[in-house]
Length: 363
Length: 110
Length: 93
Image (cartoon, rainbow over all chains, first blue to last red; front, side, top):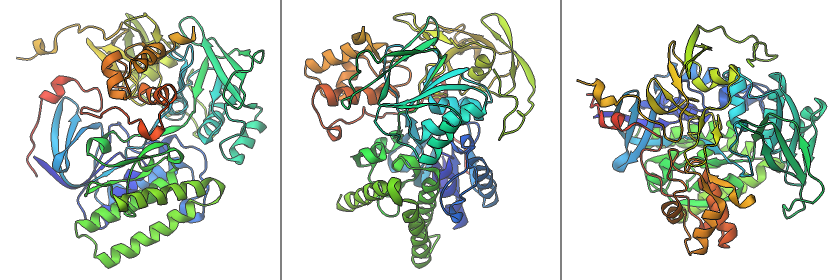
């Protein structure tokens, strides 16, 4: 059977950062991703990141992705692409499927960096071709360079909805409107002003009633809602669109953590069910760590820091770092994480994260 | 509907042009791009029809999770076209429900 | 008709079928899956799982923290059986 010291599952920002940090400490690291290309969602992020200088503010996700890949190669991370971790078995053994065969990989520690999946909204016509996740549209335009449609309705005014709208405009599509069920815009003001300046109306307290068409979307009906999400009669309007993008939140993608028997907590601020973890990102199952969106929906910058923390912790447990050096390095990362979870948007996440850690310690 | 020029990403990288046979009709694609992306670029949005109600389905998650985009590729049904790279000469067919094997894979083996 | 809203895209199970299962006393995603087939399709409930949780919360008046997602089992992606059967055991280099 094949062996590795640390397996990192998911080569997005969290997984790459975790693999680099653990390999740098001297651990043998295998980084596994089901996709043909590493980078997770980073290569879709063509906008500039916020934050401080040390968090690479002003840099585009794409550029950060390229740097991380080079660094991973340099520190000797073994990267296995096109490889699905289809199961996580007892004693930290992984089942891998790659091409025409499957194999087992015995690990000593596992870092789950599996990211998130997009939430959906069910409404009449939501199965018609042309209705898709906003993330799907972003992948199409920024990675595959294909437009999902010409006239688009964006459902959801959180950061994903706002950013993908702007990127759809950059790619040459027309976004007819952004609608948001809540009375307020969920995303950052900067992103909202940007799309408004580009002429896209943001309609708050609006929902999608239906998507209509024969074999694919030809139009969408939207309407105003009251504060209990009930459609206000007479406010319906029909928009001539060929595409409806759903940007209605993300959920941690934690199938492998459930399979491993990790304990979970339901935390709405972090996207739903989140595996409990301690200050080192270790779950309730010793030797299994998590980082990034699977540990609660946040951002690429927090995902990378959580990845570093998990990488340092896993390498430390396997004696690649002295406890003293490990602790110094980890506390530096924790300080940077605290700095990222700041302000109106970060505060709630900081509180939720503290609760997760406390619950894990009591467990 | 390809994005050839882009204000941030620049010109689309030039890839090897290939041909896919989709329901008997040749379409142009770029080698290595997902089959679903090539189909969308050619203007095709309906990828399959469902078993119970015969409803059309297309690309939905583009990440290989939702399985709405499955088609029969080189005789094998239920291939997720959003994560399967296009190769020259691939034979792609739309399917109803879970489709059918065009030939049993075991028969191919010795 | 709104009641014909599809919830499980793979198995084509509607909201009224899920609600009917809840009226009959089912209270978990796993039970609803076995009874209605919602989540039994090719994707194994990746899209409808959360929708069914939401319906349970609303119709059975449960707290979100009382509604667990369906059980995760390998394989977590649709992998052909022949790939699983073709198990390669590589020796360490």
